[in-house]
Image 1 (cartoon, rainbow, N blue to C red):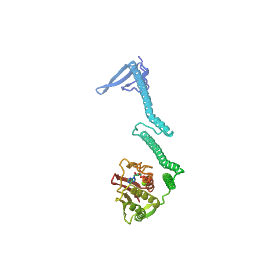
Image 2 (cartoon, protein in one colour):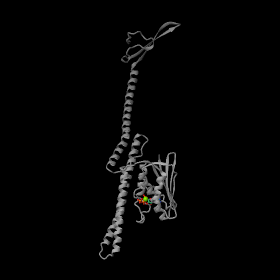
Image 3 (tube, protein in one colour):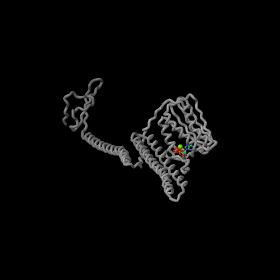
Image 4 (spheres, rainbow, N blue to C red):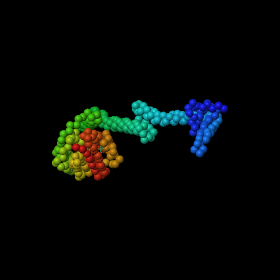
Length: 357
Ligand SMILES: Nc1ncnc2c1ncn2[C@@H]1O[C@H](COP(=O)(O)OP(=O)(O)OP(=O)(O)O)[C@@H](O)[C@H]1O
Ligand SMILES: [Mg+2]
């Protein structure tokens, strides 16, 4: 057996002697040992490299299999992860495609708590809002066509009767009066709708100025008082003299006239309507409170909707279009304010407007 000795000095502390033992048949080590403090000799140890080579090649195999398995698992993991990430994105893409085609019946899966979840939630909210707007628009158009159809039916019917030859003059004039009234109703409905459309598009301007609230109330009070007196309803004004408010007096007058018109229409005689103004920490509060018929709780959330009336079958003489409060709401919002309502059937209704100064 030949042992190739390295050219470098031999390691004498049990280390391998050969430079490249993997190519050799044996691994050799040498260890010096002393006796009584003096160098006594060397121990040479040899080990067949076959076993070691076998172990190494087995280990290599294991490492290779393990690496392969790890790589395979990583690929599978990436595949499923990318699927999990892209699936909601694909669903959202399909949903937005549907939305752009006008189909708002979109249902996205329950969103997770990450950015994708937020995006999915936003798309769902957008779809719901668009769906709601679509339904509202359809209902609005149905209400308008109904509102227009009724007076037009009257006009048509009475025009037929008025045309009869054997009709006496007094009846003819009466029918013509009805035709005129109904056509005026149609034209005022169209005017109101046009006003609302303008409010919607913000094509109207609000010209704010500082107004003394008490004086402002007084001028409106004097204007509406005769109508209230006529119906036997008391009108009470309560507002300190020192409140100033930034409003467009012409537009805001429309707000109060509409609310007072409702109080007048929906209150019985011997009741009282209150107009009240107050200010606290720069917030002006205006209330119009009546002791009228009140609004049922189920109708309360809808009264600011266009063409919404609690009593759909109200007589044509007293019935409005159900547009007054929609206009009031838009005008108050345009002033940066907020209007709320409280009502109790049989006891009365209270509208409160809040405007920050
Ligand atoms: N003060 C009130 N008391 C009782 N019900 C009210 C009062 N104000 C409003 N309402 C109810 O709310 C509905 C909507 O009011 P809104 O002012 O928008 O319409 P309207 O008075 O019927 O018609 P318009 O104001 O267009 O002439 C009314 O039809 C009525 O049923
Ligand atoms: Mg009204």
